[in-house]
Length: 219
Image 1: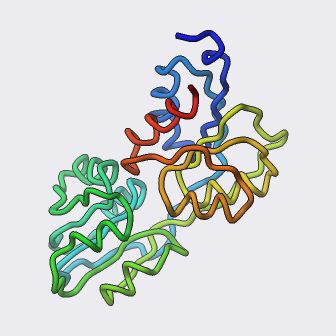
Image 2: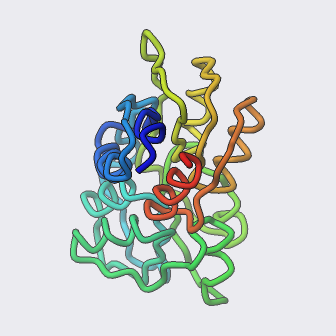
């Protein structure tokens, strides 16, 4: 491997409980990883989530999947997971997803969800995009919230990896002037609107795609 590439430092900004799988895979590329969570996840919403009467349950993050399984009451309906990571988190709780769209975005899920979908429950983060809930006239239950962190001093590196819009906003608030790799179009849009330079975007919009995008950006 090119020695210059080994010297590149990649700032990984995911929440602490989500950071290590991505960091380890980037290190496997021969890159130096700066572990610096810029967001923190914390439970929110009701103690119990009643699922009886729903035709579909839509889950949009691994953290949300774990929180849902912890609080779920009643029979679990058909489940749509936004991506492989979310599906894996559900599977760890012995729930198989009935739909995992090819494109891991709300738009991708909407494009593949059978219609009419019937009564739908969208379980996600406080402040989540309302596109999916609006299009499906779904009920929404918040399961967690995201808070931006401000490490002092700010992290130093050559590339920053942004796996969510919240991380993009937190990176901008720190004034990071570092080229960014984004997990998908929503995060890219947030990053650019906040004045960050996005040099690569994951495709597919999941962990595998994010690692591949970092590899491209590091050449």
